[in-house]
Image 1 (cartoon, rainbow, N blue to C red):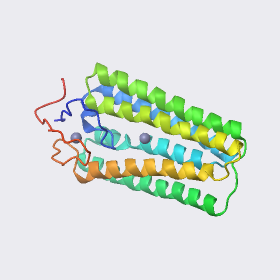
Image 2 (cartoon, rainbow, N blue to C red; image 1 turned 90 degrees about the vertical axis):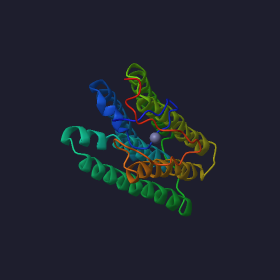
Image 3 (spheres, protein in one colour; image 1 turned 60 degrees about the vertical axis):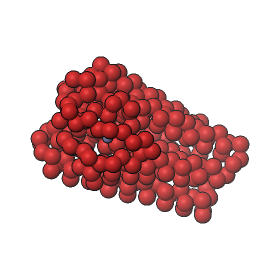
Image 4 (cartoon, helix red, strand yellow; image 1 turned 90 degrees about the horizontal axis):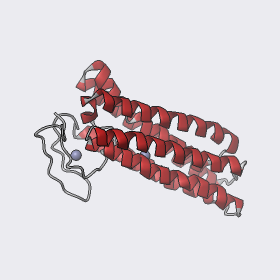
Length: 234
Ligand SMILES: [Zn+2]
Ligand SMILES: [Zn+2]
């Protein structure tokens, strides 16, 4: 069924199918999804107050990451690989459109500058992103080690990296406070690039049919042999 990535821990974009092997794995994915969704919800409220495009990009990123678990949920509930593929395609298109919207908002703000308000609230929005992603990382990494699931551990690493992305939102609040007028949209563009990277990784996952068999040449810099013999460590 699943493939052993030998624990080298890269993320394929979408949540890996191997996680469906256990209820505990699904629970970890569901719980971390909930945490990310709540994080994005809180950030959306703060975005409405501050109008920061850096925060907008960060919250779109968090929604996008939460959405990458949808195909697995669909596959589990409908027991259909076809439905999983369609859900995956839908998620990738939705994340791509959202990334474009974030990029557009940032560019519009560069052309027609206006500063975000309530910088303290903005910094708190970044802090929320850091806390939410760290919590999601802990949930996934713990379950990943317990279940010996390289895919979950990789997703945990992804969430941990995203906690650092959210630091950029705090940086934006600080930069605007000291008078760097274009900092907010420029940071927004940087975070948009991160979202486009997930979109690309997720697209590669779908294109290559990352299901029971995946024979894709990994587009990563490290070549690795895929062991299709059986579930990792199970
Ligand atoms: Zn792989
Ligand atoms: Zn991410």
